[in-house]
Length: 607
Image 1: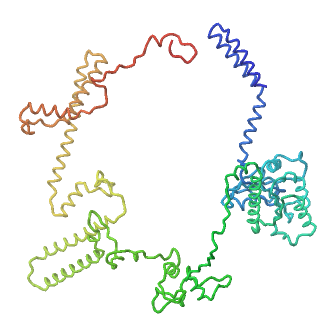
Image 2: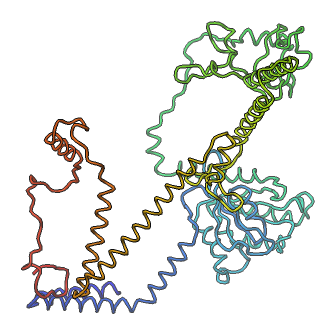
């Protein structure tokens, strides 16, 4: 084998390495040995490729647990195996009206008696010799041969699958050796199309003979379409498999070790006293009222879960009903629930069960406390109505005053003043209305930086001079001086910009005059120094404020000012985690003599 050949090559090379005169010669021998081993493995290329294909094929197979509780279904194609699996498990196997829809093993799981069961759907099997069966059929044959399970053999008595009952019985006899030591159930399917009672007697006898010939075999009928007998077939298969598993364990050798640890007690009579049946008094009263035991299918006079009727009411009270003993009692929560619409519609008011000092407090609103104060003390639910009443009263008083003023010939105001007062009132109402409208509009707020700017030719903005003049004149204010001050300020900025441009042009002229007899590098360096000096001067002018005397900032003299400046500078220092004078640390330097010279093949980095 390839393994023995590789071992022989390894022994020969180890023997030769012992006589190697240098490390280089030993390394060459090792490379030669590895080359010979690779040559041997290349000859096994076909076998290794076959093993890789087998591994891929096994990875596609379903994960079967051979030790768990298993139900296996078999039979000819299209007899209802996949439909039965979809009924009892959560699997979703494809079901089609043609043969060999199921081409591989499908595994599903179901629960029965709080146990997890494994259900296997196998491809259809045809009635011919083992050598003529293809790979799809051999999957079902292999599962039947190697799994300990409960087998369900499906028979289609309607013959809609395309095979007669004689062919289905012949297939059963041909694979009958695979059913040895297994719980077998012959399932007669599709009784909704062809009932079992109306089936021909000859065909019935053929199926019944199969049941008699096979050991541990039973017979059941079902229909996947009408779901008749589906749960019964599942329960029977599971119960029979459980019983066989228990019986196999009891008959094994391990049961002796288990039985030694089990102790069974048989109770004995402790004395000769006779203890009669004790019936509670409440039960006796109920038996007397009902006249003994009730008839089959009837219950006692319990009204729990039912809405009260008119015969249950007592007097004029809606909360009292008549109980079984004829006495009045209060309705319970369930009776009230069914009376008022049922679950989800009515719920009991649990405030009735509050245990408070004063029972009248139970249905009061629970206060909401914020910062130690009750919110309801500061909230008036009628504030809108009160405000409307005050405004209406104010308008009424103003109308009365105006009526009285009109009736009086002598007035304190002339016509112009009265018109101005009326205009002020109208403008006040307009402002109130616009404020309310602006608050209620659902739109984004304009940023303060662009608020008031001109948007287009139709909306010049509120910051234009003409708009400002109109606005201020509507308030009765002369805005001429304010606008003039704004124009002066803009002219000052223009003059500053013009002066700066002229200074730049003068500097350029000076540069042209200073470049006589200088090289291009010197000219470039000179321009760079001037630009840097201008930028530094401008920055210092902006950052430095006007110097003040020490007495103006609360200090005595120049010495005190310098000390304060030094303390301020020390307070602004931030430790950045750098090395200090107390850190005695030596940095790692590159060792030159260890990293020089020619490097050969290998992983070393030093000589």
